[in-house]
Length: 154
Image 1 (cartoon, rainbow, N blue to C red):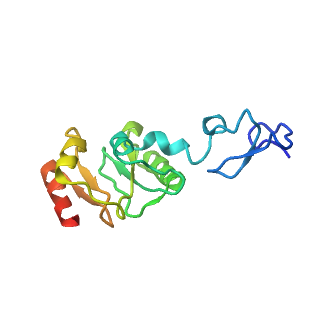
Image 2: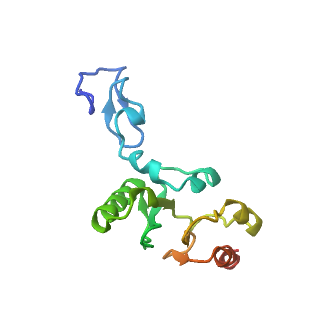
């Protein structure tokens, strides 16, 4: 057996399987960042307010692509590795600035936070907001309207 990353020969007990990508690695490359795992590459593009607010499961969570430059929003959510590919495709095809194209978790099956909680976590400095609880996602250009919209989910 060989390490998928460095092709070094590995034998039990030094063969490890990544729980995300299911590939075999040596002890040196089992850490996600050491073997460039397909599940963790797009994690850096998740909008940070979402990471702090919700404990995300990158192995099974579903994500949409949101571009703050042109207003693009994915209509269908997908696993993080596929959402990451869609994000890259959007940037390559439309020339949008990479730092302004994010992944947001599909929250359509999650509990809706109360309005007071939303007031604290919904940033002010964005051109628009996307309701990830709606299918397909709805886009709002007014922050107050976006926060008020959540009453229909409660």
